[in-house]
Length: 100
Image 1 (cartoon, rainbow, N blue to C red):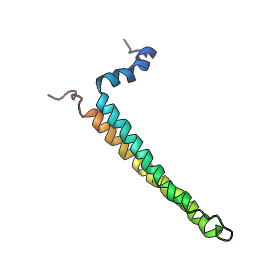
Image 2 (image 1 turned 120 degrees about the vertical axis):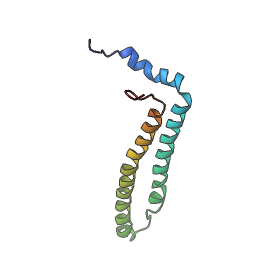
Image 3 (image 1 turned 30 degrees about the horizontal axis):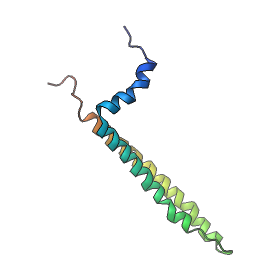
């Protein structure tokens, strides 16, 4: 018999995880929050360096257009590393199948 999908189980799964692994769920959320804060904190100097006066726009605009590209590359490079670390920590406590 094929396994079926239960919407009740799907809705209840996060709460079951919260009951069983409270600390690991908290650490996972803390890591994701720290990564997001780290990325957005890099944007503050970029916005602070925008010129307000006339005549400074060309060079500042070129730099302004380059900074988001660098941030995008950094975020895209770090995201898989963060997710792999989270997956590794989640799978660390599971017993392996087929090996004794």
